[in-house]
Every structure is written in structure tokens, then in C-alpha cells.
Amino acid sequence: MANLSLRDATKTFDDDGDEIIAVDELNLEIEDGEFLVLVGPSGCGKSTTLRMVAGLETPTSGSINIGDEPIHHQTPQERDIAMVFQSYALYPHMTVYENMAFGLEESSDLSDEETEEQVNTAAEMLGITDLLGRKPGELSGGQQQRVALGRAIVRDPKVFLLDEPLANLDAKLRAEMRTELQQLQEDLGTTTIYVTHDQTEAMTMSDRIAILDGGMLQQVGTPMECYHEPANLFVAGFIGEPSMNFFDVTRADDVLVGDGFEYPLSEEMSASIDGTTELVLGIRPENVGIVERSSGPTVFPGVVDVIEPHGNENAVHLRFAESSTDETFTSTVDGMRHLTGGQQVGVSFPEDAVYLFDTATGDALRHRVVEDIEEVQEIGTR
Ligand code: ATP
Image 1 (cartoon, rainbow, N blue to C red):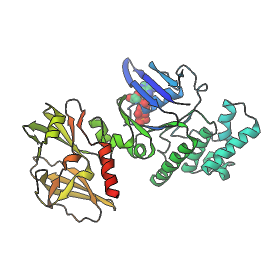
Image 2: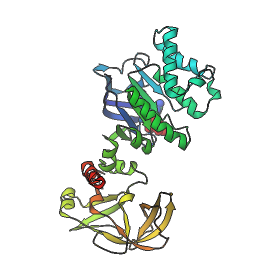
Image 3: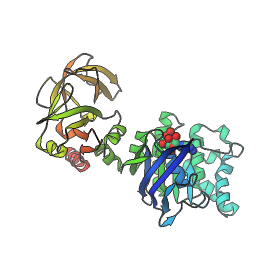
Image 4: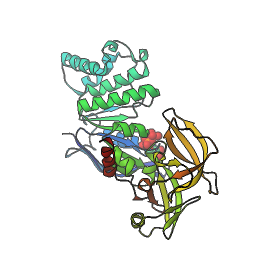
């Protein structure tokens, strides 16, 4: 069993007398065999968290445990954890075989035959058997990446820590390695924390995502939960590409008044916002409908601004016809749909896709519910 837990884990740094709180009372439970992706913008504390788990940083306060055993006082060597860095950190003068065998020889008392067997098994798993005699300088980025992974795998650790391991690869290889890595982790069943600032990696690879901002945990949940049930404005804006559209609105009786539109409040919406008057209305681009002009209370006059073709779909940037500013928002539509800049349209915001946030706190007051969405999908496939 290798479930990993961080309890109130905090790390502060001293910057010429100023205290930097890199990680702020972080609580996380990572289950045995789970693939947890730690995601957030630059400087949010991802690497510091990983380095605390690896033993490269000591927490200022709080604890880190594997099972019931506190590990935060142990040296990196004493922890049964393997880390893969963005830079790969391979030894240039050693062959691939030597790079992979080195860590194993350092951390175990296996015989030469046993070491050879483990290196060969890992190399086979990663498809790099024919590269074992080469030096890192003779390998492509993707191959070096595999060797770095191989070096971690041979040690058969309790926990893998991966710090942006795909960041140096080109887009196509990155997409391939995403699937490969995910499959590998599933086969090995090793508890894994994977750090990235790329929300696509977080969505596609993880069992659960933990989202950090400013050293603080914003939400932890399955990719579907974080996408459909964001806890706050930060998560709603961070997860999803293109990002959710946000509009400042003020409640006035039974409507939400925005710049260029007035959204009617249903009883259910009204109950969800309670007495809050200053709100942010959110809607994802795929839920913004483009229809014939004005056909119902949740359809508003709009103008097409710019169309960004992506092949399979188009990102359409729109403005409200009655808006006082030039601010645009995005709708994603089928790639075959023909729209032109300047075209007058109706913009539809279906009620079940509308999110509401408290402007003052950023907290989500109304969001979609994953179970409802799964139910709709099931009905749709019948
Ligand atoms: P990135 O995606 O850019 O790597 P990150 O989310 O991994 O960012 P961290 O490297 O964990 O962020 O840094 C968190 C905060 O702690 C940042 O404000 C950073 O400047 C600060 N920090 C990290 N290490 C140190 C250090 N050794 N001394 C002082 N400040 C540090």
C-alpha cells in the first residue's frame, strides 16, 4: 500500500526579509495506485510541493506520510520515491543502460544479473531496448524522455513524481507520450503525482486533478468534476480550452443585468444565489448557441466579430449588439458552419449551462452537475 498524504503541508521561503508562501497548508490524499495531476499557473507552488514529497525541500510545517509513516524527516534516499524531471537529468557520459542501472545500484543490493534483468524489462516496456548502448547525446528528445522514465521504473518505487516530463517535446510527440505514460502508469499501478501547467494534460491523463493557485489548493476532483462543477472562478477559468466566458452582472429583481443583455432569473437560479447581487455569469464556449435573431428570453442580439477556423470546429468571437464596449466572448461551433464577420445573429445562453459566481468571493453559487450530464449522454446514445 502506498497512499500518500500531505497534511497542512506548508513551505515558506525567505526573500531578503520578505516571506514567500510557496505552499500554504496543503491537504491532499492520494490513493494507492492513483494518478493525480497537480496543475496551476507558473509560480503556484507545484514544483515546491513535489520537491517536498521527494525530500528535496523540508516543509516549514505540516506533515507528509506514506501510509501511516511520516516521511518528511527522511532523506530523499530513504524515501521509496522516484522523480522524473523536465530536464531528464541523464548522465551524458553514461550509456542508456548505465543511466538506468545506476540508480538501481545506488539504492539496492541487487546482483548484476538481477539489475540487468530489471533494466531489460523496463527497456522493453518503453521500447528502448535497441538504444541501451547509446549515450544520451545520441538520442532524440522523446527517446531521452523514455530513458528518464526507465530510470525511475527500474527502481520499482512506491511513488512516482513527474515534474512536467513532456514539456520539452513537440506537440505531436507530447500527445503520443500522454497516452503512453497513462497506460504505463496503469500497468505498473504505482501511485503517481504528475505536475503540469497544461490543463489538457491534466484533463486527459489524471484519475483526479488538484488545482493550485497562489500556493493554495482550489479544488481536487475528477476531470469531469473540475470541468463541470468548478468550485470557484479560478478553476472555472483555468480548466477548459477555450476558457469559460465570464460576464459581470447585477441582480435587479428577477433579472441579471449585464452589459448588452438581461438574463431572466428562474426560481431555481434565484434560490441558488440567495441574496447576492453582484455576480459573474459564466458559460462555456460550446454551450453558447448561435441562432436566428431574437427567439426567446435567453437569446440576445449579437454580432459576429472574428472567426478562428480549427478544422473540425470554429471558435467564433462575438459581441453583444447592445454592449457599450468592444469586448468579445467565444462560441465554438461545427467547422462546416458558415458565418461571416459583421453578421447579425442571436446568441443563446441555455439556462442549464449557466454558471453563477459570487463576485466578492469568487465562489461558485450555481454550476452544472456531472450526474445530470452523464444521464443526458446516456439517453442520447440509446
Ligand atoms: P512553474 O510552473 O513556473 O515551475 P511552480 O508552480 O512549480 O511554477 P514553484 O516553483 O513551486 O512554482 O514556486 C512557488 C513560489 O515559490 C514562487 O513564487 C517561487 O518564486 C517561490 N520559490 C520557489 N523556490 C524558491 C526558493 N528556493 N527561494 C525563494 N523563493 C522560491
